[in-house]
View 1 (cartoon, helix red, strand yellow):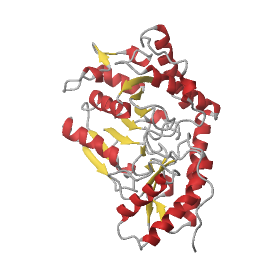
View 2 (tube, rainbow, N blue to C red):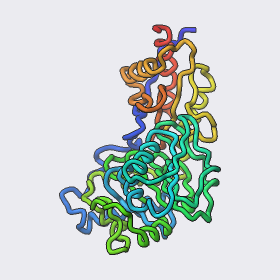
View 3 (tube, rainbow, N blue to C red):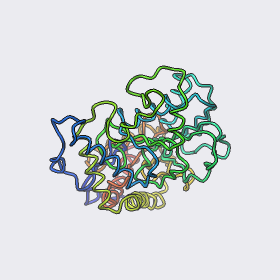
View 4 (cartoon, rainbow, N blue to C red):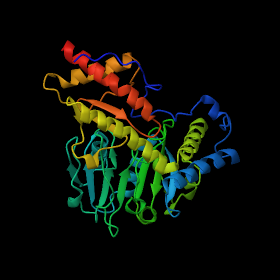
Length: 380
């Protein structure tokens, strides 16, 4: 059956997995109150940085005794900071089931030269957490941004663990219910679920992580941009708005506006519901079309933000070329931008479904995906 070209296009075709779509209400005018041309150490700058920290705490439900800091270099900088400051005190288990988790493995083993236990799973699968020794420090991503596979909950993490858990939650924070009592270090970036600007990261420390910082000194030197302690004590100012290096106050204002929008849609509960609705639309599409499927094998571990899909039609002889052609076709039609699978992942598509994406745009895009598939499979 020949499919006709759909009549409706998405109002916003941006489905990139990072930087992600801005909140639907975003305009440049919302940044008019940015503290431009002012020192970030002036009262106005400190107030905005502190507001960003406390609004983050309130929306995410971070416990009052956890420390939240704004740090350089996005989620990458935040997670590297955590590893360089905290690892080495005890044995480490590195868990990876996609590209970014694999990157942390490389840094721990080859850069920090830790004698770590490395546990991996193929794209679409997840590491068996029942085999993990939580008396060791454990490093993992909550949501595999490049595989679309997430940890469904924190039930497998024991409350009485002796080691620390270091969680890269950059595609999970603000879209998934993170169990703070199971996480000792959590990192994410502004550019993901809330569609903020890049370059800044967040690091959240439990009291157990702070105790480690104040009782343990790593064997390796720490660059200034990574240092969280001075004289054996936490540099507390980092967690009240006195950032390690100069932040972009324009980006800070943008994040504050994103947090304000998040409140307007119901906070964390509303953001999760929006992401779930977007993913449900794709789930229905996959169920109705036998030529496409989720990369994530188990429905319980399928992400509701970075939704990764694979083509399953037997007529496709070169999966990578086919997926690339589909993504290019949809971009040319201005119906789906930046949805090609990650370069290290199996061939396919990756559609961002975080809360800043409107379900109406997902629903408008999917018929175009079906149309593009028919055009390409016929041409092949």
